[in-house]
Amino acid sequence: MTAPRVLLTGAAGYIGSHTWLALLEAGFRVIGLDDFSNSSPEVLNRLQTLSGTAPEFVRADVRDAMALNAVFSAEPIDAVVHFAAFKAVGESTAKPLAYYANNIGGLLALTEAMQRHACKTLVFSSSATVYGNPEQLPIREDAPLSATNPYGSTKLMGEDILRDLQRADPQWAMALLRYFNPVGAHQSGLIGEDPRGIPNNLLPFVTQVAVGRRPHLQVFGNDYNTPDGTGVRDYIHVLDLAAGHAAALYYLLDQRRPITANLGTGSGHSVLEVVRAFELASGRPVPVQFAPRRPGDIAASYADATLAHQLLGWRTTHDLAAMCADSWRWQRQNPNGLAG
Ligand code: UD1
Image (cartoon, rainbow, N blue to C red):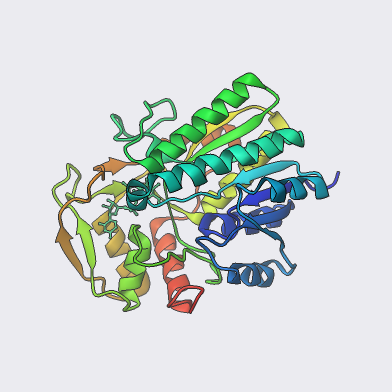
């Protein structure tokens, strides 16, 4: 049997690039698509170094129906992993139309192209953000869903669109994967998270403080109802997340059944725990300043990760120390990201 051919949208991004490598290592043939709107072409060189082969790549916006048509017409695609989307919560509240246009428009263009070419196997990047402010912890997949900002709405709507499509045509096999908080980087230090401008997320900010690009970390709130008062999240190593996509693809191609699953470790860490673990891993101090709560933040969020384990045989293998060590190696080797 020839290896399945998988299209990755948003392939040059943080999760996309790590998944690309994981799929190649698992024996899939991969074609990447990205418009570099939030990533760098340098990722392709890094992937070539890591995989030993020139990556197969198309530069295009995922909403470009002609480009998608060309990709699907060139050679049959067995499955798609759809990462391409905007993901900054704050920006989404300022530019809601851009978020709906890109995230919903991209999903529609992609699924239409897939339908036209009878490719009905899809892994969709969803997010724990679809649980809103969770009533119960750990969070199970059957917990109530809600959105508190336009970015979250696009993930929830994306899931709804795909559930409707699957109900209308049960030949679709799709995995809706709800990521918790991806951190870490490939152990080579060649690929990692490369945010533009001031990072929104915790780990990129922490690493930039440690490398001297920023003076201190602002801890958003120390009066939450958590053990040390700071926010608790389920940080998951991006390599574990990438492996989860390979597992989901195997499942879909083999079982042809829809699945909605959390991808998290199942345990939470506070902001201060992350800072301490990072200081240990890096040997660098990370000065903190307490600041008011960030609007829209929740106290705690962590996954019940049993379903992914039961269905996919997948579980995480990297702990917080490894996440911090790998984030640090990436930052140290690329102090200004891929542009510098
Ligand atoms: C955020 C988004 C989530 C999105 C995810 C990936 C919100 C409310 N949620 O998750 O929808 O899917 O990013 O882009 O924005 N923190 C600090 N100082 C900082 C940065 C963060 O104290 O400079 C704290 C936060 O208050 C939080 C924790 O660190 O308690 C994690 O924050 P972050 O990395 O932004 O992730 P989420 O907010 O969980």
